[in-house]
Every structure is written in C-alpha cells, then in structure tokens.
Length: 143
Image (cartoon, rainbow, N blue to C red):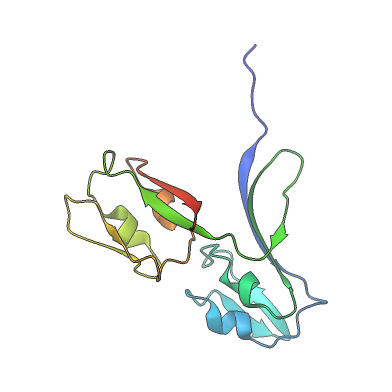
C-alpha cells in the first residue's frame, strides 16, 4: 500500500480581537486593501495575499501570520516571513504570468524573457511562484 502524506501548506492570518485596538496601522500598510476596521481589524481572506506586512507593523502583536507545513494543525507565528522570489532563468518561459499576478508590480519585463524583480518593492507574498506554469520561481529567505 503506498504511503500518503498528511502534510499540506497552510497560510494563516488572524486577528486576536482582545489584543487589537482598532488603531488602523495594519489597514494603512496593507498593499491590497484587504483589511477593514470596525472596532477591530478584519482581514478579507479573499483579498489577502499573505505578505505578512500587517503582522510586521501591528504595534500590539494582534495579527497572527504564518505559512507552514502541518500534519495535526498549523503552527502560527507572529511577525513577517521575509521571503523573496528567486527565478530559475533556465526554466523560465518568459510568459510573465508572475508579473501579471504580482499585487505590487514588483516584477516586470518583456514576453519571451525572464522577468526583472524590483526587490525593494517585493512584499514576499509568493503570488508569483504560485502561478508560474514552468515552476521556475521559488520563494527563499531574503538576504
């Protein structure tokens, strides 16, 4: 009988209501306007690109953010995962699907050539790596 894995990637972003003061810092910093404030911050999972900027800027550590592999339940971390895409130019087909998907336009270029990354603009959300049909982009720690 073949082994099956119970591991899957989990992306979690949650607001701890008792810690959130509704100050709005996270909402102002969100690059895709996924956060609204009504007494406390509310994050739209449909709009959120899981960049972690909200967790990074929250002065009260009220935002839990994590991307992890799990079996029995997710491990949630406060703070931002400092990731950046690395493009394997030998695999890249130059379709620019990654640039089209980037919520902050950190990738650009010409069809037929690998995209150019503006590292200072990149929020590390991983949207580019998830849409790459050639699997030429992987997320690595910045630095």
